[in-house]
Length: 325
Image 1: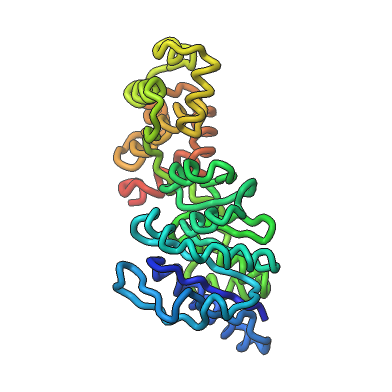
Image 2 (image 1 turned 135 degrees about the vertical axis):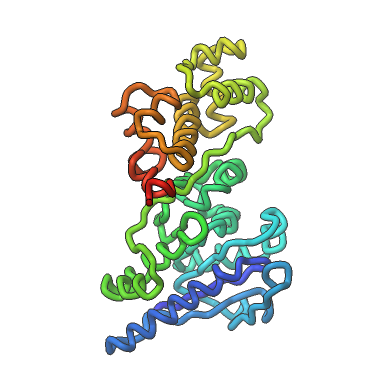
């Protein structure tokens, strides 16, 4: 039986504390029904017996204090709520315990933006990590040594697991169920909770926002030009000349400021415009393609799928009410 410690930080999102407890308890019931031993021994662990969540709207009564858990097999790290900086500072005392448990062989599992807690330990440096796509720019800024793969639903490396945004963590929890029981139990659990078991990417849900929270003014000027003229054919050389910077230096500064190459940024702006078009208009794929500045249907489809995980038609059918009708 695997000993699971669900860490309960102050200001944690209640669902990301209760959902893993609920799922693992249900899985234990499935195991018993199949004539097998329970798979998980789950405890909620905190720095105090009572932990306030969501601006004190909820109180969680922990099963054990940190100092009472000398060794555990798995630590679940929930997502914080409210102001992220305040939540991290408020729970800084939890970090040494997480590091200690990992050094003793425990697996670490972050749910959604619980990745910020996990990254604060330094244990993610040089490793892959996912988190909510909305917080990706902030995460990259705070933890540049972490290999953020924000399109992924799940990452797994060296006993460390992370999940994408919001309900994506259900897929990570199911992955852990399958690893610690078997495929049959995981499928049963997915059916009970109505979860698509093989979801691997959060790309269809990602919204590309202007990445202008930096101080490089020439790069900002180039970004603004791209966003206002995305339907035109813009070259890197044209942008570099416009801001009076050598091309190689411009490309380096652009990548540093936005975490995207210039070409990637132009593609993301075009595809975001195409997505909005598919969501709100009755235009066909070719019409949308021309509207956002592409003339090669194969190239458009390839880039669209790379960014969203779906083909243009699949995206339109998924998100356009008229298309669904």
